[in-house]
Amino acid sequence: MPFAPVIPAGSGKPLAPYSPGALADGVLYVSGTLPFDKDNNVMHLGDAAAQTRLVLETIKGVVEAAGGTMADVVMNHIFLTDWANYAALNAVYAEYFPGDKPARYCIQCGLVKPGALVEIATVAHIGK
Figure (spheres, rainbow, N blue to C red):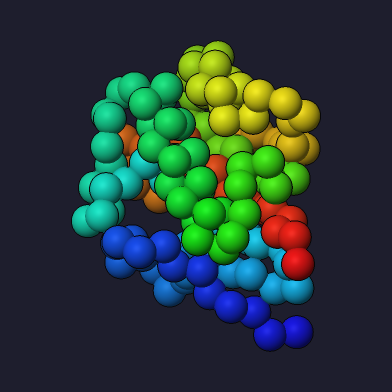
């Protein structure tokens, strides 16, 4: 099945060969999103809440570029470098998903750039 890359206007160049999102048959897959500026510099060093907000705003931009809203998100894959940041992540996360919550999992791991505390990859079902 063919897919369409989803690249919001003003997006920076990815660190590696990938698109910010891929839309296939009404399903949007959002690549792992880190707290980067347009030049792939880590923003909000040491602030997990601010990094989470930046990541979710970036994801929101990809979802909206595909024609959806955050209410269309059905799954989030969350990666944290330290469980000490779990509460901060959840506080911001709850603002973006105030109603029914998407499925998710969260693991602790290392991330691709030092200083990044959180990464989220998302799946959304965009209505046809």
